[in-house]
Image (cartoon, rainbow, N blue to C red):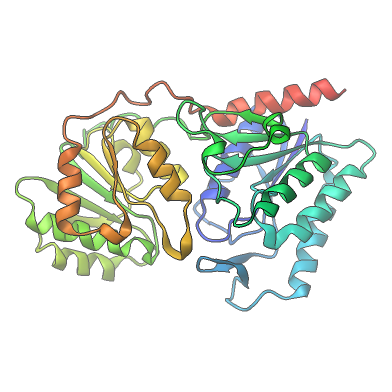
Length: 379
């Protein structure tokens, strides 16, 4: 079958990572798969096996998702939007997909609704209409107004055959973040988490007995890193390892080493980060979708510090959901301090869970099964 996946990531790259994992799963089953990306390119992502189409890239102005910027930082113009729509519709017409998947829309990306609406209308006008599915993570940003949930229901009713929810119902259900109506409930298909294969233990047992601190790239993790550096300075016996992301992390690394009094290992993000978690005493991280899965797959006890700037609630809701599991604690950014962090890390001692628990982490593969089955039923 021919599969077209459409995604635009506006802040981090988590949406693109999940969509790419989904596209890989379709391609691995022999389906002709195209991923259309509307966010900024992420050069280190491996796109082999998937045809990539890059729209004119845009991103949000920080956490202001209603104000979009071009890759050069200029405000997006109508010409930019027209270019994106043209390439999107040209790709659809050329490909004539059997399955069309939109990531997040219509539950989010309202600022891009005109291009999504154009895509959906064009898809329904094709000689052989594709199966149309929405793809959403475990936690959505709750609608700010009731009418937005109603509007999403109406779009689903009109254009979509189903909604792939990339979560395990035993840990998180969509109702925890989004008002699920009876008509929407009938369209939901829980796939399990969309995660890469588990990393497994480190061949050299690196990370043994350590507190591993990671907060992605950019400045959003500065408060967490600074609290961790202060905790390492006060800590007796524990080894704190801070993994700093970003293209040029050297100045941040030097500053954090100074804050820790030289009592922490501070280094750039490591490619074996996921393997370190299998041996660490505790992980201290934010609570994005992919990071949360890394923690769950490894069984590592964790202190989650959800990103909550600009009124963001997604990570907070996810952290609240996961604290029901043994050995997972949450700390608000506003409460962060070295003392609080030390107490939270100490509370996780001895609470290592079995790696992977019994949750489904094969959500990409199960999504393929669900989509193919739904498409075959339409024939």
